[in-house]
Length: 215
Ligand code: G3P
Image 1 (cartoon, rainbow, N blue to C red):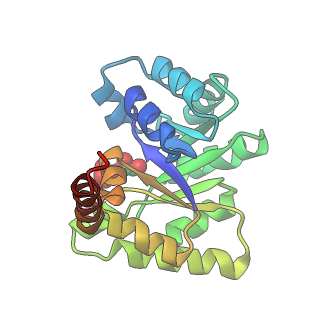
Image 2 (cartoon, protein in one colour):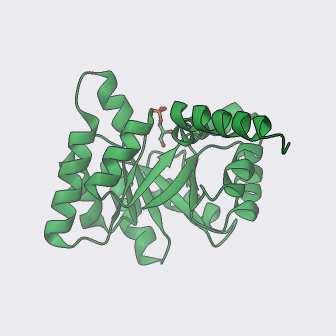
């Protein structure tokens, strides 16, 4: 399973990368706006830090402009993946960019049928948003399970990138379902590291070592 970090904060990405948590990066307009920096500048800097895929989202809503923007963003670095919203116009852009050899990540996917259309259009990755479905009382992970099942059934090449991850449990369940990729905020990556029994066990070992007089 690949781990992407969902962030546009270069320092955070660097820290996560030191720990082997970064097979790729996803950004979105909200995360870029939070960074307070220029979009292209941030993407270029992230691409220098990380060799895996880095998703950069188009802002256009019409296919012709999305394609133009996508071609332009793809020039920033060879590992840029064009993130495109799940709309009819978006699918036109995905098909065209795919035919030009450019990788895409279709975002804002909320059901298995949308994911099926992404695979048909030749998208490289599909991003089902788990947390935002949970927020409205619909089981986000059940959607992921169905997408993985459908994709395996027909051997689609599109990778399932689980997004809108809010807790370690989302990651554990997505891994059990066989999702290809999970994109995780840094805070949730840190939460995954810790267990109270690990901390307690370490403290006990240190105390016993101290008692032995060897420290
Ligand atoms: O990758 C998409 C993700 O950033 C959305 O997360 O927490 O805003 O639903 P969230």
